[in-house]
Amino acid sequence: MPIQSNSDYIPVMDEFITHWTATDATLKVPWKEDFITLADFQQIRADLDVAKSTLQARLNDLENSRVTLEQLRGSAGDRIAEFNRRIRADFPNNQLFNRLPAVPNRSAGRDVIISAMDDVLDLWQRVNAEPITPIFTPPLLLLGGLTLVQFSTLRGQVDTAFTARPAAEREVTATRIQRDDLQAEALGIMKQYRLRIEALYAPDSVPVATLPRLTPLPGHTPDPVTLSGEWNPAQTRADLTWTPSTDPELDHYELRSTPGPEYSAEDETVIANIPAAGPLSHSTAAGFALPGAAVSYRLYVRLTTGNERASETLTITRPV
Image (tube, rainbow, N blue to C red; front, side, top):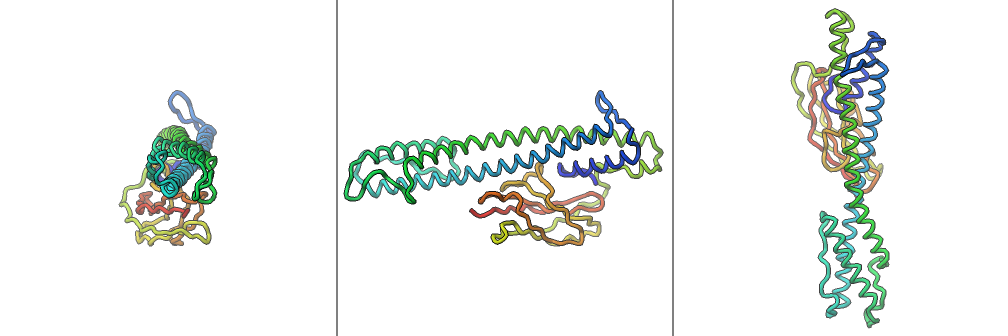
């Protein structure tokens, strides 16, 4: 099994560990200024497994932060618009309220939204200080009984969500760097291990003949299949299907995913290995903890040579 993506490192390392154990568990591999033992390599594999698992959790946190921010940003915009409508309806000629804040769009940045919410808070306090009229009795309540205090709480939630987003991005970046460093080290050791085995054993020997591959064998790239799917509200999961591959060298299908509405080949994770005989479908609830969460998928056709080809990206969003 060659390394075609970041998701291949752990399976390929397992192949090398099996080969190393069967061939010579005492063998040491020179690496940089040290000698790597089988136990050392197994520890790198364990550390990489933790890093990859942590990265997946951080990516989920990042997607959750996106969903939370979008929902709070939308809620804030809706409440600002509602406040403006109420003021125009109840105080049409009051000069204190003739400059209402502009309603920010759903993609507005922090300063725009927080500034508009601060304007609403200031005006709301002024409104609550107004005398009783035939159509208005303070304090002002919006739909659902929303109070000034509750709107102020919403303002704090929006501010927190804007802060949480870059913090989540930093966590992803830091964990990704750790994963990449471990993968680079593992790849270098595996390359050196192959050279060591080829130098110590005859070309026609079992150790050389069974060496795990790091690159695909010569051959063609398969045609992609068509991936489709939809949200299953009854089961709270995504239902995916795809067309069959007709490649005679088909080995299996790999369904990979990344959290969020945009696919990242750098961070893809294999969520299912499907044999060549099928089934041509898969259902999953992974990544859909929050309403509004999105997961992007690609279905890879993998050949016996190790060559592969991905489908077009399919993104499924859990409805709010």
